[in-house]
Image (cartoon, rainbow, N blue to C red):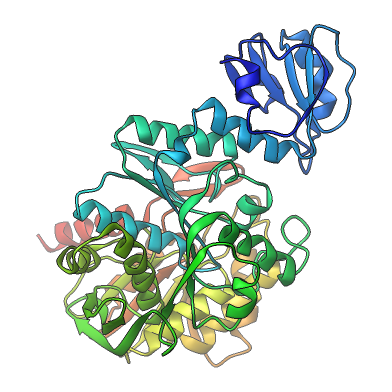
Length: 490
């Protein structure tokens, strides 16, 4: 593709060279730059791509995008732009022939609910006959191909590559999680979302390497409502007015509020053998009863979001209800049937806020006992351990403290920190370092009416110890424990 074609939607200044060049690939990693490459100089948190301009020219690269002039041979074309990350998104879209303009793309942002909602939407739309690609925290799904994710929202070069692959696979639409970082760093620039969702916002991701303040976090999140045609927003969020301020899309709302366009009315908790669920009446733009095999108020919000999206795809009431009934998300309130007497679930809750939300929700089901098994990651903030210990001690009847990803720390030291948090409460606990042994203890000591939560690992299928990742999937551990139990009884 000609360089001039790749730059067609970009504002730029050509500092030197010619635009009449054939570009074979676009890269932002200097190690991948070679003859035929267009190299984009990105300022990262650790490395500035501008420092590699001379070396990539030496590798044969004849076209470079920069934010400031660089010294390279005269036969290298240098394109100056205001923001190279934004430029990369537009260049990537052009290079892959604008797949985002040809797919119906749904973007979901918010502090909580993004992952579950993306899978619910995928489930409903596929049940209605659409072919759907997915980009998210856990994985990217393109047809039969599943690619584990490194970031919630990949870099723009990868986003556009995935969208192109989805189009080539025959997908009608794509649903993707859109993080505040992804919006801030222009990873989703270069196309307009057909539908943009804002689930909720709470203080999170505030820190030196993320957002400087809650206000900055919110300002990044709400960018989605200026990059979509239809915006769908949680009307119940206390920051609703700030969220919609400056939006350029047509707006719809959902929630419990009488002012919401899609409303949940008369919610009821459901308890079956080994399964927790919820039901409600949907009113407003659509009217029918909904039942989900997932617990809690947040499951209502997630399902309302999914329904609000799928309404724009003319999905029938029957297809919506059928898909919601069986929608499952790996590691998000994932029920594992081990007994008719008690409920066991796996959830990714890995900080105090998410753990408190989960345990508070499960308390509403009035379990005989609420049992919480968790650990905390090594080489991470110790405050998280104190906070999670205190939350579990306060809300769970029994806490089973175990190992998560100890990384380069001693598991016992992490457990001791968690115990410091629990000591601020009257909560009972046991400590079992080996996670499989801890899960076996939870299963073997389960009582009728108990709800047991394995928290923190969720979709992860590894345990990181001393710089190495070892296979460890809680679903596999549960299966092994049950098989071992069966052999002992035989």
